Image 1 (cartoon, rainbow, N blue to C red):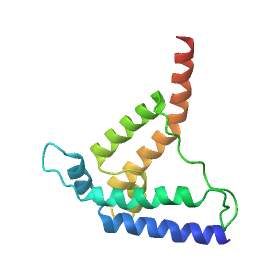
Image 2: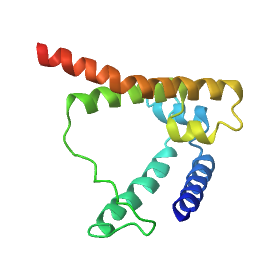
Image 3: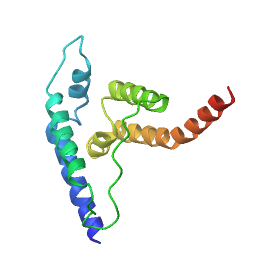
Length: 144
C-alpha cells in the first residue's frame, strides 16, 4: 500500500511540475525546438532543473535500498549504439511534431480533449509496436 501511495504522490508532483513548467503547452515546446525561428529558451531551465537533481540522485542511491522495497533501476548506459540513436531520432521527431512526450501527454490528458486522447492512443500503439519492430530489425541485421 505504501508503494501505491508514494507512486500517487510522486506522479502527482511530476504532473504538477510539468504543467507549471509549461511542458504540457505544445506551442512552448515547439518554440523550444525552433532554434532557427522564434526560439524560446525557457525550457532549458526546466531541463536543467530535472537533470541536476537526477544526477545527484544517482550518486546518493549507491549502496542503498528504496524505503518502499524493491530496488533502484540501474544507471543508464553511456554507450551510443544504433538503437539509441534511432530511438532518439524518432522520439525527437514525435516531440517536435506533436509538442508532447509521454509525461506531458499523460498530464495534459484531462484538458487536451479528443486530440490528447488520440495522441496518447497513438503513442501507446507505438510503444507496443516498438519492441516487435526492434526484434525484427535486429534479426534482419544479424542475417546481413
